[in-house]
Every structure is written in C-alpha cells, then in structure tokens.
Image (cartoon, rainbow, N blue to C red; front, side, top):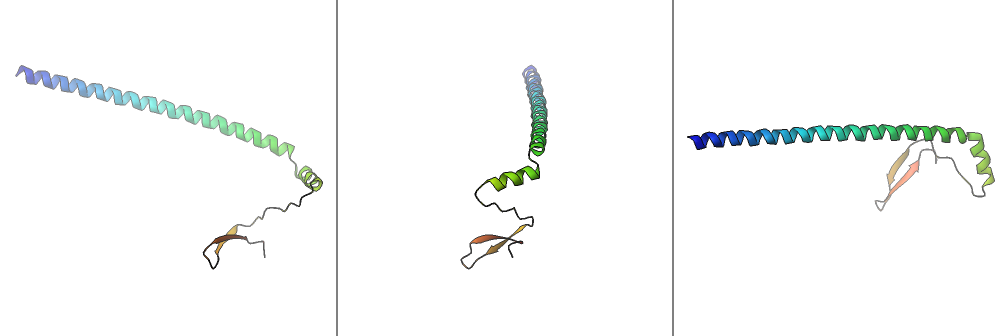
Length: 100
C-alpha cells in the first residue's frame, strides 16, 4: 500500500516538473518571437528611411539626364501586366500588353 502511494506521489511530481518545463519553453519562445518582431520592425524602419533618401536623391529629371549621357539605349518598363502565352512546343513566353 505504501509503495503504491509513493509511486503515485512520484508520478504526480514528475508530471508537475514536466508541465513546468513546457511552461518555461513557452515563455522563452514567446520572448524570442517578440525579439524577432522588434528587430523586424527596426529593419523595416531602416528600409523606409533608405527608400526616402533614394527618392530624394533620384528625381525623375536627374534620372533622365543621366540616361541621356549613357551610350546604350534604355526603354521604360511596361506599366501593363504581362500575359503568359504558350507556343507550339509548349514553351512559355511573356508578352506585354504594350508590345502591340
């Protein structure tokens, strides 16, 4: 009888310890997620500040002047989305709506 009671107490103690370990792991995981999220927000703020600096330094008129000084010919990107078309040998080609 005493051995059964001792076994039950030991089993309850082991279950309680296991639950404490799982709880601690959840707390550490939540802390790590918060830390990663904080770093992500900092990186996004840095990215937007770099975007604004680039936008300030690259005015459209300045870009046009720079492109005129380059020997190779540049074409603007199409503003319309591209459509995928398959050819007779099932290869996929992209065509712009602006190509004609």
